[in-house]
Length: 504
Ligand SMILES: *[C@@H]1O[C@H](CO)[C@@H](O)[C@H](O)[C@H]1NC(C)=O
Ligand SMILES: *[C@@H]1O[C@H](CO)[C@@H](O)[C@H](O)[C@H]1NC(C)=O
Ligand SMILES: *[C@@H]1O[C@H](CO)[C@@H](O)[C@H](O)[C@H]1NC(C)=O
Image (cartoon, rainbow, N blue to C red; front, side, top):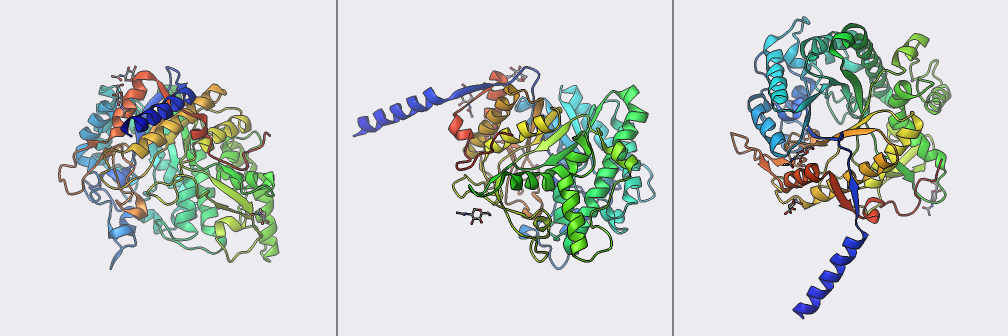
């Protein structure tokens, strides 16, 4: 019996070996890891740091609605243990670190410099560079100063001026050593979840997506102003690059009757609202979005459109305002058309598209995270053909599991398949320069608290020293950076069964 079983196993593994393909990475491709200030730093009220909207959200009484009522007050305590983060990067043989600066640490309410905040990031940046690790700095990863929320935050056009002051300080303070800046992380998430349906800080509910739409509009203008400021004031001396981090999945036809147009609408409304103004030849919002929201606003009897317009000057300021696209990719979905109904999910009713996931796809601990590596491959090619092949960093990509899962085989599989998808896209000609995996260490996963862990290093919240324990994926990443290859089978990558994207 034992021998028969053994024989079958041998046969099966021989088969998978025969079908596996080796995917390689060019020598210039960079492997790194990512974090964000509120999710790791702790020290929420130390050395002059002001409260952010996430401090407000997690300190709401009698209890906040974060899973288990937890907060980022301590998290991974990286404000004190940044050296452990650098050790973790070195030990995984990673050469890029994407982290974010807390706006609330570096500026006072009167818009004066808080030197202790600047000192913290100076030390982190200097120590990274001393270890040969390239810093990639995000300016805004969701932690808006509460005093700016009090005047309307991203829904108030005055925010553009405040953001420009902050960006100026960041470029001036760190740009002599930091050569890759990201203005914003995932505006579609913090705008929609924070300002349409009160799921994230600042927990605002607005009728008919008006809050999310205004937020996106002012984020785009803030991004462009910061980009132009860098070009005019810092580029000559610092010679760095400035981009924006956008997230999306790819969309597939929900069934054979779903028109291809629905797929395109889904991508344009979610992703194109930011990429079209910045990366397209024409600039401005996607026409399909302009037309739909203008027409629906009229239909509702409004005297002006819910979607604001950019002036001709603003269209020009936005067009080409990124040296690269930082792309966060986690998952993809199937879409189908629905008809306009303002009483349903406000994000989808303007696009008239709804989505679902194939129940056969493997799902992470996070209920929204299905393993669809094909989506990353198709998305990279969509970006290449749509926007004349911009430089792209995969600035986030990762898998969640239960706390303290050290033997993280599912994460290794997810990384292997997504790296294979990236390698395949590079072979097609996509300019993908590197990846910073999400995340370096277990951290505060927003409304999910500490229940969904994304780190390649585990953190035990009962350990006051917050030691970073390598999960098995650290050893896997070391192997990948050493060999610059991954092995995968095509049918592990191409999991969208029924109706793949037809050629353009
Ligand atoms: C396929 O999608 C169309 C358009 O949404 C829908 O009308 C139809 O019921 C769907 N068919 C099946 C078999 O799910
Ligand atoms: C890394 O490579 C070593 C040597 O080939 C191997 O023993 C180990 O299993 C690999 N680790 C992982 C996680 O794949
Ligand atoms: C570490 O990564 C570098 C660059 O990717 C690679 O050349 C080197 O072989 C790796 N070292 C080890 C020990 O894996």
